[in-house]
Each structure stands twice: as structure tokens, then as C-alpha cells.
Length: 317
Ligand code: UD2
Image (spheres, rainbow, N blue to C red):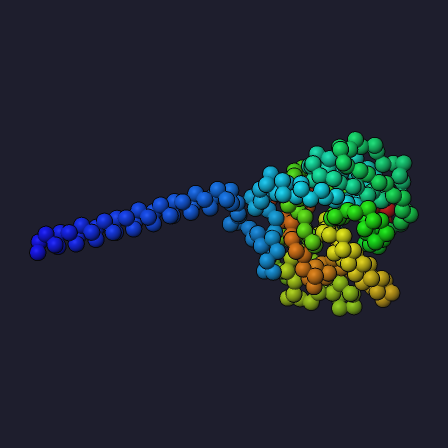
């Protein structure tokens, strides 16, 4: 009887021991393989996905080398537009030189630079498979018209030229800016918005949406997800064509009704993104307010506005 009990205890002990070591082994293996597969990616201090499951790109949420190798096989062309009218031509050199250093490095990029003074655009040495087309546009007396007028010019560019020239994606960027870090294929998607650097960590009621119902850009109080900058947006040609066309149409209706949205095309862009959700959002790393300002959760500043004396560079106040 004693012997039988001992055998039972021995077998039970063996069973418990083996089960425990199995569990420990599985746990360790899953941690190892999990880390191995994800490379420990992910952030806990910021949201990296929206409520509609669009990724929000932050440093630490992607593996640049891996994502480059995936996109490299697709032989992509990224069209990139900037506008430099009046005194803003002075910003184009730093923009282009810094873009050559940091922007879609190793990928085909075609810059389209719109200006009223082609002769004032400096000759910047571009890398292999990097192209610049300078296009002349009429001068304008109001900076607000220059800023808003971009939507119509972009619409025409995509409709009349880019579709034929087979660009795959387009980004539309402010020129009074500079690149300081990688901006690469992690930013590509169907429709891409960039969270405005002044509003990424504030409650919704602070957002400077257009609040007058008379404007087509009107967004009522209590509505809205993010406040997006108009200084950088992009996506597929088809989606950005629809965006620029819609914003242009809405701004034309406002003009007919003698109203101009509070933040011009940015107000209309925010209205557009509210009802046509971006499929990917870029964190304020992709458009910071000024390189010298402290950054909080922004661990790397990739692209930033440069400081400017608005009264000196703009044609009007
Ligand atoms: C904000 C937006 C900007 C635009 C503008 C409209 C941010 C951070 N920036 O910037 O994208 O929506 O408000 O209210 O959200 N430009 C010229 N010549 C001029 C004036 C403007 O070429 O004389 C072009 C240039 O490409 C410039 C862009 O228009 O980058 C926007 O103008 P801005 O940068 O002066 O506007 P800002 O800083 O108020």
C-alpha cells in the first residue's frame, strides 16, 4: 500500500514538474520569437492607431530597413510638390538640399516646384533618379490666395500630367521647411494626413476648425478626430486628386458667398479628412513647428517649419 502511494506521488510530481517546465519553455520561446519578429516595436506613451484602425506613424513603430526592402521591389515614383512665390523662393534651396539628404532616400522622387520667378530657383544637385520640374505660375498679392490656390494647381497637375507620367504617390509640402531626419516609405498610403504640431496633445475643443456654419469648412462643436496641418498631406494620385478637387470646389462656394475659412485651405482639408478618413496618419515628427522648440513625445524631428518673419516675407499681412 505504502509503495503504491509513493509511486502515485512520484508520478504526480513528475507530471506537475514536466508541465511547469513546459509552460516556462513556451513562455520563454514566445517572448523570444515575439521580440525577434517584432523587433520590440511599439510605443506605450502615444496612440499609434486611430479609432478607425489607421496607423499613426511615430518613431519606434516601424523598422526602416525592413520597410525599405519591401517597398524597394515596387519601383515607385513619389511626386512631391512645393510652392515658392514672392519671397518664399528663398526657402527652396534648404528645402531641396535637406530633402536630398533625408526624404525618400534611395527612391525615385520627382519634385514639382511652382513659382512666379523660375530664375530665382537655385541649382541644387540632385541624386540619381531624383528629378526637379520648375513650373511658372502667376504672382498673387495675398498670401492667403497663394496658400489656397495650391489646391487647384495640384488638382490640375495630377489630372493633366501625373497620371500619364506614372507617379504612384504624391506629397504636397510647405516650402518654408527643412528636413532633419528620415521621411521614407513608412509614410506611404492611400490617403495620408499629418497631425498639426500645435494640436497633437490638446483636447478637441481647442482645435481651430472653422466654426461658422456659413462656410463649407464648418465643423460643429463636439465633432472631429484630429487637427491636421495643410503644410503636408499626400497619398495615391486618385485620392489626392479627389481631396484637392473637393477642397477647391468648397473654397469656390465660400468665395461666391464672400466667406473665407479661418485657416484657409487648412480648414477645408480638416473638413475633408473628417468625412474621408485618412488611411494613415503621420505624427508631428513629420511636421514640427520649429526645430528649436522642445518636443515631448516627439523623439525625432524629421521635418519642421523654419522660423520666418511673416511681415517681411509675405506680400500682405
Ligand atoms: C499655415 C499652414 C499652411 C497653410 C496656411 C494657410 C501649418 C503649420 N501651416 O501656415 O500649410 O495652410 O497656414 O492659412 O499648418 N507661399 C508662397 N509665397 C507666399 C506665401 C505663401 O509661396 O508669399 C506658399 C509657401 O509654399 C508656403 C505656403 O504657401 O509654405 C503656406 O504659407 P505660409 O507657410 O506662410 O502659411 P503659415 O505659416 O501660416
